[in-house]
Image 1 (tube, rainbow, N blue to C red):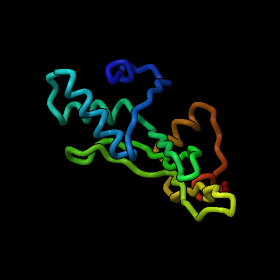
Image 2 (image 1 turned 180 degrees about the vertical axis):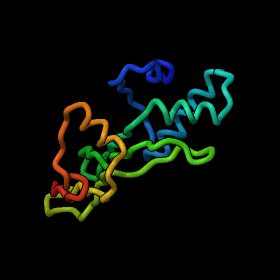
Image 3 (image 1 turned 30 degrees about the vertical axis):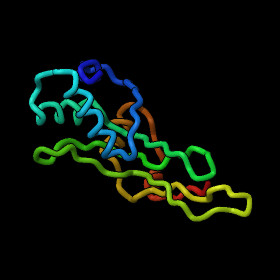
Image 4 (image 1 turned 90 degrees about the vertical axis):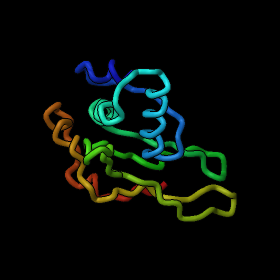
Length: 136
């Protein structure tokens, strides 16, 4: 999968089961190491950082619904660690009288590095999209 994603073809998508975006990267690394790839850990992490731009974390809430809880950008490497930054996070606000989870999807205020790539591709986002809170 990582080799295919790193061939220069944009638009790859995959799923992985993990508890957080950071855990998803660790799980991907572990699964690659289990394949006897014989690649040094740092090289593997560089492959991950190069191949994956965004992690969208979906979690099951206490009411059984699934919500996007994180949109996290992989920004590269910092030393031997895959560097990441949250762009949007779900903020749980409570539970209504019917037991439904209440919350909002909140921008962290961080403008992602990929925004410039979107712009070059002709995708124009509102300038303040990364500063908004969206009620759910």
